[in-house]
Image 1 (cartoon, rainbow, N blue to C red):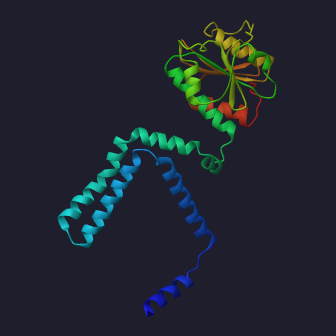
Image 2 (image 1 turned 135 degrees about the vertical axis):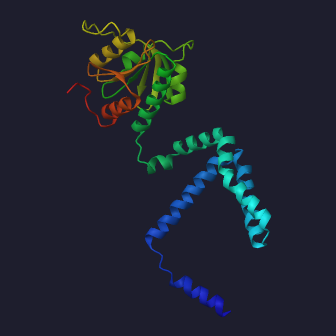
Image 3 (image 1 turned 30 degrees about the vertical axis):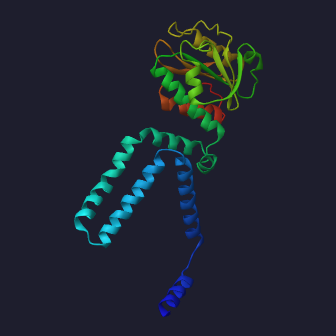
Length: 266
């Protein structure tokens, strides 16, 4: 009885600060999100298997079963590598689901425009690697309704998968431009005015002229994927930023869409 009273005194005397409470809360949130992400997947039986093996290991240690505890310790050591190999698809899906979670996005302070830029950059990089041509126009302050009406209306949430599918050769809307309003693709297969600039190199085809044309008439930003060269370019304020690497494309789009710079050459 005295031992129990002493334990209660020790608990009462513990100094629990705000930092400790925040620490416990964050750990709870992380575990909740992880469990919510793996619910209904093949990872749940695997998790139970890991817990059973861990419990068996500690039981073997407690009962002084040396051979069994050594075997189980080796199994637990290599188990994470086995899980990564066998469940790589589920791990990618879980990470993607966690990335789409609004709570985590809020914690990471990602604005909708930053998420939009990430999806566009990843999609365009994939299209460039496959040598699929693409033209994505992002509306800013000036409305693009006139050009939206020349294409097929979609009004669909922009995503990496949708962009890659739209510009895959053989699909009905792979020709023309996809116009983005906010975080949604308003229309695809749209016709844009072609730039008449005589100083534009013959290396650039109709997609680049259309990108320049829309950037000359409006303050929209146009991303071009070259079908022939697999190169990434951006047209803004009547200026073409050619042959960009993935990181350069992302940084430029963040400057133009998030930090609201003009895009004109300095």
